[in-house]
Length: 179
Image 1: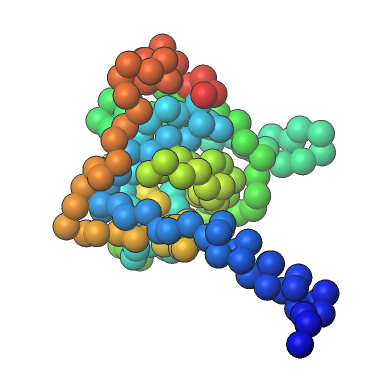
Image 2: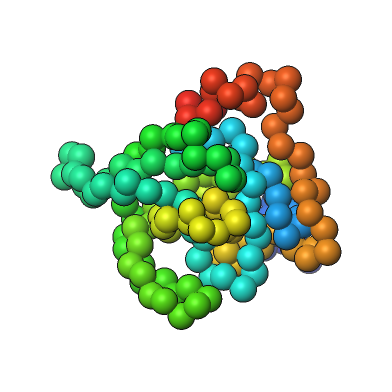
């Protein structure tokens, strides 16, 4: 019995999906990642399956309008325990979200989209902006961002290296400049 055009299309679509489906990235509970859209070539990130939302350390958060759309201007300290390195960023506002911390405190935060590169793969994720100065990591990657992408091994750390120090993107003078 010959295949009808509709059947053939379905078979080809399934084959194409099978070829493009990526294997999940195995990662430790903390990893190196980059945020090229924000000019961050490398940053330590905590992968937290207990947190639904991703959070990025930001301060001096100032909303403004550009071409009739909501934007936010903010500063980052991408290096843990080092406030000397400061990166000024701007991004369109996707929304505002009320987030409850593990201590039970609620806070309304701005939400932006940004690109993250981890384990050799690039993804566009939603991130909330909040002051994480008192936290151990400047960025927390929540389970929504990791869904269908990352499998976390809680016994391991730094399975994926930071950008090589030999590349221009890893030089201190390039922090804060888009890659």
